[in-house]
Image: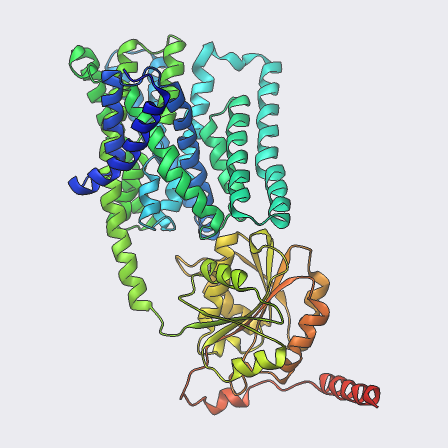
Length: 614
């Protein structure tokens, strides 16, 4: 037994360092390695008390749920919310029904059978870090699984709350208190906490401070969830969803969350799971082993059927079905909560408790292998698709009259631009000259507040913009930025261009939830200023001369931005100009000309300036 505190810390840190290295050598998931080491430590009593590891490990479980909530693609998730709800019903009801049936066949009463069915219906996203590591967390199957997980866990906990303590909430006063606590918890996590965090990020943009704020809200949310009678993992997930738009996936804050969580808290959680497993149970009692085998088979069959039905219902690929199955049959936190409370309430026997621990070991191991294989195959397929669609153009990003290299770099990372050229020009004349003498796509960026605190992106799209050679890249820029920061997009354009934008927004895997406002002519662009709110950003799609959507009024845009939008963050986006291509006469002939009203205004402006100079 190791009693020296420094020796204990040394053992834990050495384990966290060496286990992933050894697992890569022998080609097994590191999750399995940490659980096995935890079993060894627990079996031989190398540590006198596992309380500290269990406490830190619980933060690891909360972190996994927080990460799942933050990394979910909000736009795709909204599009797939119906699929997620349907899959959540599949994922709970099928294992629940099978669990009740097998438990009755084993001779248990209806209460025990129902609680065992709830245990089978829940699952833990403990293999989610594998998905995140392979970069396929935005896959449709992952979004559907995350949404379905929350529903299945909620249903399992509702069954638990209904059955434990002989229906503890039958008293009406207690029931209303329970509902009141849940309502107060949801209000704080989904409404109050994000507002506090947004104000903090607007005042302090330090990534380390942002990391501490998010982690604090995660723990407080988990505590409030447990205080209200729910599970802490639900609170952590809701906190992740609430912080989704404030913590972009490619931001420095998210990098710190990933580093600390993946390298400290998650390994400690897995070690804690292993330390709870008593390996001697495998040969101590045939009754325990028999129950464990039935539990493992029931869970695997139920979750596989749910994944198979999801594949048939939503038209998914075979590898996506395997990924869903790998993510959903792992079990830890939810099962431990249900089986512990069931044992303490005399609903479960000691054999069921021990069998559940064996089930956790087996299913965590199998889920790790299946998730690793499926995520790797999907990552290879995604990489091949992206390689086939890869464009040769690069981007030019610049600021005017200010040096904002850090902000430009952050914007480039969030919008996934490949090695853009960053520069700063002294005035708009030089910036316009630089842009017009290059064919590559360009962005002029003026940041006023941290980009992760933006609530809405207002996009002004001129007529004929959809005819531009590289307009789809500009649309993709807006879509990726919206996805990263969770901001709603509102397009201001005419009816014809709006139809093209709606078609772009509905593409499978590239979904964008957007609003639309009518703006027939570019001279109406100033009406956007009247509709802007404090945390809005405006994006203007511009164009170079001799391109389909070019308008002489674009020459007034720099002055317009300086006069009317200087208090807001804004971007001026130029699509790539196709070099050496001949623009058809029908497009150049349809290029809109400046209206007589604007010509008169421009003439009066020149006269006033000349008079002032005299």
